[in-house]
Length: 327
Image (tube, rainbow, N blue to C red):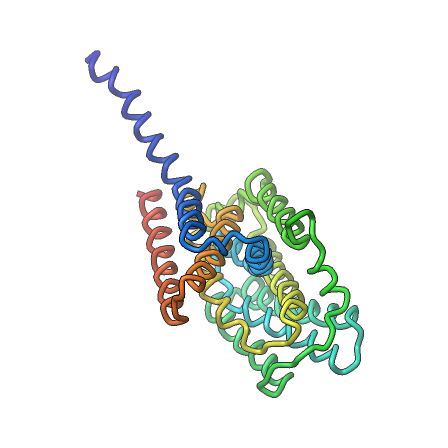
C-alpha cells in the first residue's frame, strides 16, 4: 500500500512533464528549423531578409486573427482571404481613379465591414451553416475583386501614407510588426484572462451548455464574424501598399496558410485549442520555412507540398488532442 502511494506523485510528475513538453514542443521546433536554415544559408538571418519575413508575417497574422477566434469557438470562416483580396482591389481601384489614400483606405475597410456583417447576419442571426455561407460569400468577394480590375492586377505608382507607415521601423523591426505584436498581446489578454475569451473556448466544447447558462452566443458569434471581416480588410489595405498593386487572386495562397497557422498553432500552449499566441508563432514559422526553402532552391511545387503536409499535420494533431481531451 505504501509503495502505491509513494509512486503516485512520480506518475503525476511524469504526466505533467509530458504535458509541458507537448505544450512547448512547437516553439522548440520553430527554433530548430530557423537555426538550421541560418546554418545552411547565412543569408537567412541578414537584416534585410528578417525585415521582409517580419513584414509578411505581420500582414498575414493580422488576416488570421479573426479566423483564430472563430475556429476556437467551433465555427469557420473561409471567406477571410477573399475579403482581403477585395479590400486590396478596392483600395487600388480607388487610388487609380484619383481618390486619395484616405478615401481608398476607408473604402477597403468598408468592404470588410460589409462582408463581415453579411457573414454575421447569415450565420449568427439566421443560423445558417458557417462553412456553406462563407464559401458563398468568399466566392462573391473574389468575383467582385476580379471584376474591379477586369481580371487583372492594378499597378500603383505611389503608396501614400500607408506605404510610409510600412516603411517605418523601431530599431531593426518594422513598425507594423510592433503594432501587430501589440494587437496579438491584447488579444491574448482577452482570450485568456477575460470571461469573453473563456466563453469562446466553452462554445466549442459544449455550446448547448453555454446557451443554457444565459450567455448570448449568437451575439458573440456576430461580433466574431464582423471582427474577421475587419482584420482581413486591414490586411488587404496593407497588401496594396506592400505590393504597390491590387492583386485580385492574392487570396489563393493565404487560404492554406491561414488554416495551417490556426490549426498547427493550436498545438502550442493549449493542446488542441486554437489560440492567438499559437497562430502568431505558426505564421512566423510558415513564413520562415517557405523563405528558407526558397533560399535552399526548392521549387514552388515542393513548397506547396510542404504547405499541404503541414495543414494535414495540424488537422490531425488538433483532432487527436480534442478526442483525447473528451475521452
